[in-house]
Length: 166
Ligand code: S3P
Image: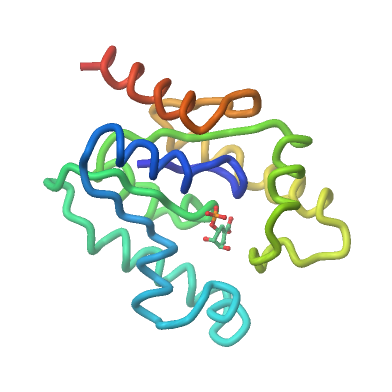
């Protein structure tokens, strides 16, 4: 299970892990866009953030803890207490982090994240990070700073840590 702020590389690392480990990958954002039949931006604009958060919980609940899988979550999954509890039931929670300049550089490459459509993105990111960091810390079994690592290196580091843990 991968958690962490937008731009920490969860989706890309999840795909690398899927290839490396060869087990199924569930991406919560993709599950939601598929079930509602619209992109995330449209879900936020037409139905609102609260509905998106409710859908995140539904998607998490629908996953079976018995199924060996890589689960990729959206950056806000930790905000609902019931989700934090569910993450733990679903397996080892790995939190990806990155320093602020790295995050801003990565986030500048895409413009489809509704929460970042603000006048001052750096301020928005800092405020969201401040709010969320305690939740990420609380939920994580393992935290990896991805700032100076490639996606492959992050995936390898996760595999090494998990191998050591068993
Ligand atoms: C969000 C992160 C996004 C997506 C939605 C909300 C957030 O996922 O779920 O835009 O609240 O941090 P990524 O972390 O994959 O960008």
